[in-house]
Image (cartoon, rainbow, N blue to C red):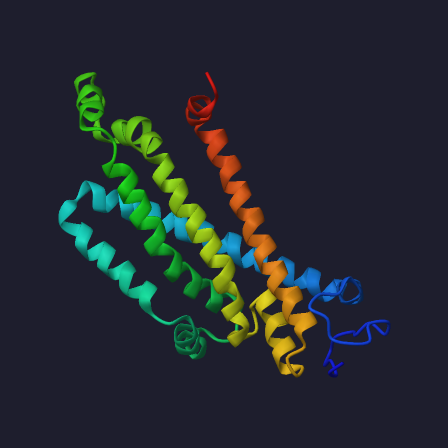
Length: 233
């Protein structure tokens, strides 16, 4: 078995397996710390990205002449290679968790903005006209009619952005805050110790699945009409 630096190698595992529960138990504290960091970065990213992205989508929807600029700006940010982005902003903001957060928010914006805007555009015109005829103003029309009907698109964007963020957090190892990415990188540095690499990979995949299930539950809670529509007659 290749030597481990800063990690415990179970004595009863004679070779380097693809996965080892003994390894997980021996390094429970390190894995728990990586999980907490990964969750913190993902949740923080989604809160900030949603707070910026959904209002931007509303602005693009309400002011059509700004739509192209908003989508283009978020699209350009999304196309920047993640390794290059963190390498560029690292010297400016330092080796801190906020450096990773800034990069992750930049990547999440395009998915959130595009899906929220699509959801708003799919609100039937006759519904908007009927609401306007009933005396709804622009603000009440947005909050009580358009946003609720656009929820499927908004939630789809949040789900996709969350899963993408879980994967991109691993690149934060460049500045020392990569959650499970730090474990994967350490496995590579430990002579490609695949037990450690697989532990970080499985942790990342499991976390993405958990977040996706959470968003499915949120959607069922916020859109009970969709749940009833899908029920058998």
